[in-house]
Image (cartoon, rainbow, N blue to C red):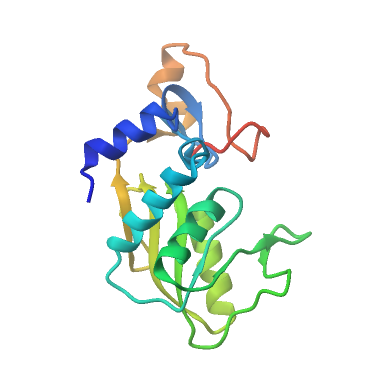
Length: 197
């Protein structure tokens, strides 16, 4: 099992973790930007990260579910290493997650929800609601990078390869804005170039 410094070096060397002034998909500002698609670009890295997540989970699940787009690659790798099926939802015309492409969940099915990065947990909560709506049971939450404040969502602890304490700021209280440092807006909800978290 690799240590924390190994994973930080991997994220930095693949430019999956950058320093600057960023507008996150949550609307908050941060001096760090995590773009896990860059580290997952390598199948070898994706496999190693998926295996690390599975190794950190104490709970058995029947299936892995991940939100698009950032969670799909790592979710698939976690499912592959755990030997369970994988699915992902899509947003409907109303912007709400729904299952399409023949995907479905069974009542009482135990689901592990996997993300690339968890910051505010907004997307994770949406997926938890979808899972519960089918009568399935969210039993575990996992991600590559947990940069949340509470390290849990709705009472479920977040298992992660790397937990980072990275402050985020409301725009009116952002010290980077106060220093007139230009803000970059690379998140997928704002720009097709990537996902900031």
